[in-house]
Length: 404
Image (tube, rainbow, N blue to C red; front, side, top):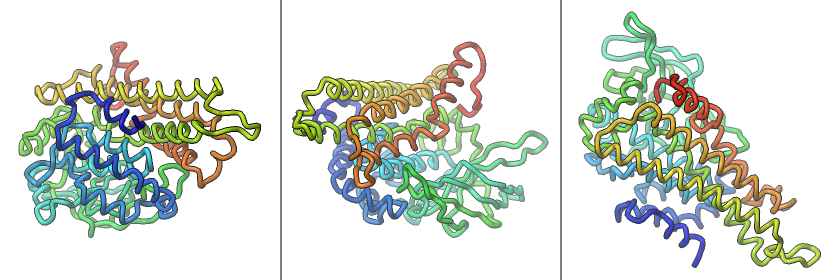
């Protein structure tokens, strides 16, 4: 039995519907061609147009889109596992897939007028995002806001039709409030700034906004997503649009790390199984190599199990219209952060096996190593922050991020 078949059979029985399982199989089938394009994608510093077209044609960006626009409204976390499958071949492709799919889920929380305006002309439209503003200017006006500034690290932005930006909206007699603002493609420019060592093909460029008018129906109070009381949760009755956004969002990021680690392990097993050293010593017979392979496999499966358990809890509570308590929320983030840590540990454990060959840019192992390290740099996966939040709440305090 192949490794691919083993992984498919190890998915918990009954977790996915037939339609969801078919999409996972489709993603698995795409990995050979994604692998062939991985080096090209890094040279382009964004996904090749052909990969983008395949993702769109397969409907992978629409898995968490509201059903009234033709979306699948899939079980939350399908995008995690789709990304993990694709990331075995190219973590950047998995990242772009998962993040872009997640944006349709978040946009489903917006007022229905904003969704109609964006999706009615073309329900296949996609959104990018940026939560990191540089010297933004937000001016409230009657019926909306006037927006200026630069936003950084907008993944897959070149291939998207609009963008969701995080901005601080001045409060009426109170403190500023974090607000999502959706802009259509003609309202911003993209600057090619993404030159990095990891996730290099995600095209996470800057966007520049000059005097953009954003009407009120394209704004969403971030704190409303904590309790599932968003306008979109009223118009889109499926439970995923009432999930606590920042407590569960890190599942949108972890798939590429899991896939990169699994892909790295696959590469090692394939190269070592029949390989020999220059002294004609059979590599697969070496106890140290056997041990490293075993430990890496255990770390990857432990990460997978952590994610699956929390994914089940998030969906089960959502279906019952139950909101998690504070400790459960920070535990979601803690477990995803630890899963990310396990994925990096697994690749680090395998690194000594590849030797000098693994340093060559043509070797896919080094790309998986770089990409996994890049994934865990995201603030929602950084282990120290997740541990601090959980430790504080477990000991009777408050999480450092009130949005969780």
